[in-house]
Image (cartoon, rainbow, N blue to C red; front, top):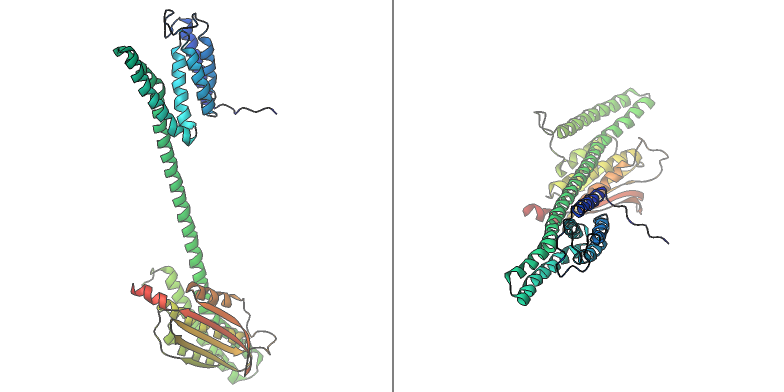
Length: 397
């Protein structure tokens, strides 16, 4: 199976052509690095130096796609060039191969080549001077350093700058991505919160309006109709007030009017009275307690939504609301008669249970809702336990 060589980069092609053209020009002018009387020249004449020149020009084609192969082959070509009269173009192209091997090679090669070439430079400086004992021997180390160590060090510096810039770009992209994710999560959480508030504030009043308007239309009794219309008007006014409060929150203070205060457990009595006015037989058993504001709002909304569901779905009978402050938590229980009704008194979407479950989950509490059998028959029971110890400690800290 034939191995397909990687396609060279366009810049590498131009680099190879430029190096080969320069070498041929110097060859045509008869300019070499060494004279024919140099003892290192084993292959005298003009033609032998063309072979290393052509090989190292070919290596330039692989400087980016296969830097290790290009450097090893180029090293052999440079060694062969030292046995001829030599070409400056061959030496210059070799320095570029050394630079590219560090810049485009593996991280291990980028770390090792500067050290290896540095040690070779030191050895090429000390050994010839120790053997020949002449100052000119130091030029050998200078040449090795210029041909090998300098381009390797330059490639390492450029690579470090490139890696640092790439790391900074990736960090910026990650920061932007995290910021976008936070923004999306914040928008989603805010939309869910506003959906719960809208449902809890308006659904109770609209359910009462729907039930009493049905009664007013179906019963031919003036007193019943007037009572139903009174309840409808009261729930309409309260629903409008709640909507104004929500609009005030959404405007974020754009209106000079202060929005209504957030519901608290002190308002449960009024909430139960409103449910009684809507036709529910409700009893409230709640001991006075002090809990953090998030728990207070969640408890109020759970009771409110449970009474709304009882108004729409419960069978005739007593609805009980129980709140108890236990050690480390607030327990809520709302029970209503279950069964005996084919269709709800007002249409529902199922968002109420979802909203209650979400409110409890945000406070790391527990929530259950479902039918249970009791002494008074089958009941639909909503249970919620809201922890308050961690929240209180967090507020004090």
